[in-house]
Every structure is written in structure tokens, then in C-alpha cells.
Amino acid sequence: SGELYCSLLNPRNVRFESINMKNVLHWSAPEGTGNGVLYKVKYSVYGVGKWIRKPECRNINRTWCDLSSETSDYEEQYYASVKAFLNGMFSDWVETSRFNPLTDTKIDPPLVSVSSTDKSISIVLTAPEKWKRSPEEESVSLLQVYPGLQYNVSVLNKKTKKRWFFSISNHTLVVPWLEPGTAYCVSAQIHVSTPLLDSGFSKEHCIATLKDK
Amino acid sequence: TAGNKIFHFGACRVSMSTTEIRAGFTAIKANIQARDPIRTLSILSYPHSLHKVQSSDRCCITHHLFNFYVDKVFKHCKTEDSFVNRKISSIANSFLSMKRKLGQCHEQNQCTCGQESTEKYKQILANYEGLNVTSAAMKSLGELDILLDWME
Image (cartoon, rainbow over all chains, first blue to last red; front, side, top):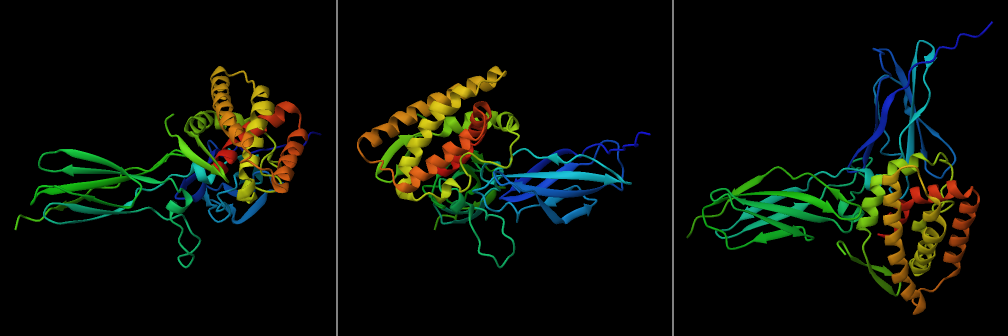
């Protein structure tokens, strides 16, 4: 007599979501399943033969798994895969597309700090750091990962609504010949030309130039 | 061309733009890589990543790889998708122009080939010839970002 073969529908939309190279595997539960579904995860380095299980993501009920540590070498590319379980039934392994940390990560906006004199404002920009395993680990700026990294800076005169745009490689910018006693708002974005990666713009940092002496 | 950059390959300096190649490849990357089911082999990175190549050998390896892609990859990458085919031919044209520029360095003996680059290129050819032509060409095309990441 035929063996009853019950299989579970597959996890859906299995993909990496990466910000500043914090690489987290995400997926959606199999269609029509409520609570109680468990998952396990494995990953592999492209070009290397074996799949490696992720113990911390074995028999989990959440639908994400942080693989940042396993995918931290951005000179390599990776695949990851998820399998679902429920009441003795299980799905197929469902794989991501090939993940390239260098080109497939998103970059946060830079940190912006501003100061002013009566006729100028000084802007200091700091690129975000690459994800790291622990606070004790040495920080790596994304500037080191993307040597061609540039900053697009927007400066808005709140009174006249006039806006200037600057594109700079340096991390500091002094905007001269401004009006004393006037509020200016600064916002900045990171631009990497190859591979093409743009962060969003930072929130605005407003400051007033000093009044005339 | 927009996005021209000076690439330094040892003594050889070449002004090129990889921006269009990157954009073209990004547009078809998922499609092309989905056609490559072999996870366990990489044409360019097996057994060692391109990043392990010494800087003195960069020019020679790059020169070899441009020839490799023009002579052995693009022509074997026809698909049923006209959009993908157009992107592939646009990338191929960009490679032809880069190949010409780097060829000038080769002619001026600024692109010497050491043992390491010779060995590395032999390994790449061996990886390529270990598969049937279409699979090998499609896998190589899917690894274009590996080459670009290393070049840049």
C-alpha cells in the first residue's frame, strides 16, 4: 500500500536583507499556516561545496536568522536556505538568490554635525560603520570598504528657501559667505559610484549663523 | 564616458568606465545567476579568490580575463529573453573597448605575466572546461560582479 506522503508548503520570499553589511535572512511562513511552524537554516559560500547548518536558527519559530557573522567576508558570495516543519510534515529547502554583501547591502545615511560662525557653517560627516560581531571588535568604516565613497550635501537657507548641493569626497565642508543671524538646514547622503549604492538623506540638522557683531 | 576612472594595474594606467557594465549586469544578475544551478564551483574564485592575486600580476590577469570574456563567454550566452540578450551585448561591447585599452599596455610591455597570473588563468580555464560550454559561459557571466568587485 502506498505510503502517505505529507509535505508542508514551502517558506516564501526567502531573501537576505542587509544594512551596513548586517546580513539577515528573512522569509515568510508557508501559505495558510498559522502558529507552530518551525524552521531550520543553512548557508553556503558560493563555489565551495558544502552547506553549513546554523545551530542558532534550528527549530526556531521566528522568520528571520542573522547570518552576519557567517557572511562577513565581503569578498565572497553566499546562498542561504530555509526548511519548514509542522506536526511531522516538512517543506523543501528553499534557497535565496546569490547574495553579494558588497553590492547587495544598503547603506545608512552619514552622521552629520554642524557648527557656525557669523558668515559660515562647518559640516562634519561620518560614514556608518560596517556591522561588527561585538563592540570590542575593531570598527571598520564603510569608507574603507568603498574607497570611492562620496557625500552629497544639501544646505537650505530657511529664510529664502534657497538650497545648495555639494558633492564631496572629503568628510568636512565649510560653506562661506552666508547671512548672519539666519537659520540653515543641512542634510547629507552617501553616494558610491561603483558598485552603485546610494544611502537615503540624513534627517535635517538646522543651525543659525551668529548675529553680526 | 560617464564615470571614467583611472585603473592602476601595476605600471599600466587605463582610463575606463565600469559604471555601464555594472548597471547592465545588475539589471540581469538575478536572471543569469538563476540559470546557474551549480553552487559548488566558481569559475573565477575556485580554489582561490581573485583577491589573492598579487598586485604585480593584476594587469596580466585582467588582460587574460578580458580576452576570456570576449572570446569564451559572451558569444555562448544567448537566452530566450531579448532584454537580457541586449544587456549582454552591451556589456560585451564595453568589454571590447576595455580589452583594446588594456591591449595597449600589453603591447608596451607594461603588463608582464608572472607565474602566479599564468597559473591562475590556467585554473580559470580548467574550471571553465570542466563544464559544458553553455553552462560554463553562463556561470562565468553570472560571476561578472566578482571580476568587477576585484577590479575596483
